[in-house]
Length: 201
Image 1: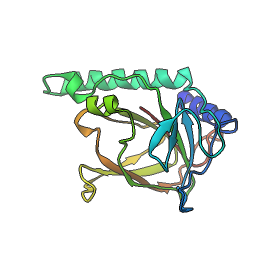
Image 2 (image 1 turned 90 degrees about the vertical axis):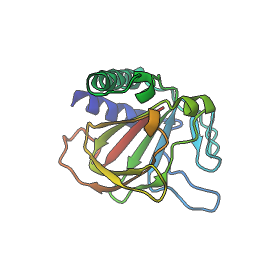
Image 3 (image 1 turned 30 degrees about the vertical axis):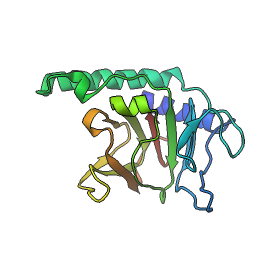
Image 4 (image 1 turned 180 degrees about the vertical axis):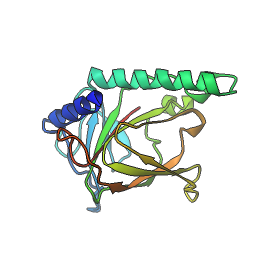
């Protein structure tokens, strides 16, 4: 619980500063149904590329807080220990290649927010080839995470609750996914009242 509160406070402080939360839009005027903040490097929805600065205002993304990197490291260690104890895979590296994040995207969703069907495929060629995992932390309201191996095959659904950690790498690295259907949840007053996803790659 303490880690969640600290993460929300850190996101709020960074989000109100230079390079903080904004609503991304496309050249045709369409807007994403969320507010986003990039840490480490900026992701541009129009080019689907990462860069050092945000094109709309020239802001440089804040650095990834060391607390976030520590949380990712702990999540990776716990997942590796679980896989080693429960998997028949010949190589842990095949299931979950180790990584340390240099990119982090923080998405803030209102009650009507969503992120449509997509793949996380804009990272470096090296990262994608090694199938390095994406580590996602959910804080706030419950949200529906739908995924599948193909664009037309959304055959699995997970309800993400506050405090859940979602990791997909190895053979699962290139899944299609979407976030939707946020459900209000009773939370301590220190939380933001909606949903935050902190996603590190």
